[in-house]
Length: 233
Image (cartoon, rainbow, N blue to C red; front, side, top):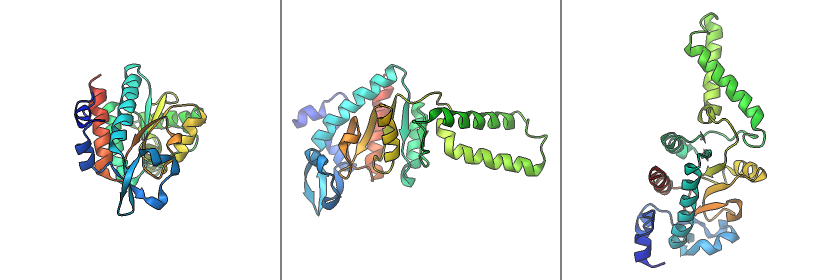
């Protein structure tokens, strides 16, 4: 891909900006997943470097797919449970109106959604009762217990409390850390979109973004480009 072509792609993905954000830095060569080799351009200080021209190509495909999903009104579930990424995930998802999980993935969120949905409905009902003052009839001790329960449910289900059905796709920020989410989606044949670092099997993901999934600057760049693309819809 020529530099000129890169500078003028539809989504304005510039290799220089990607490099400045650190998207090219993978993991130590000993941790590289063999099937990631087509996306690697070299080595620097025993760290594999991701080929950013290929990142532009794959990221563009992913952005086209995301735009299509949004245009069709599909549900995209954002998953990112790394401690340092939790706020980024919440802000990104809330800005776009996407459901999200930024705490521990609850097994069965996709594969056993009817059970999860019952817990969400209970959580919403409890919240509504508190807002309407319907919990005031209970003792102070009982109300404190309800408050704690609501707080715990908010942590578990707050990001998906308005998700009425199984998502049409999931977007995973760290495929290795949230592999359970990926496997549940694949089991239900739900497309997986993911940031894929050099230590990850790219075959777990349907639409990949080859990039550093550890650096906040790298993830921020990716999320900003997704927001830009979707807001143009």
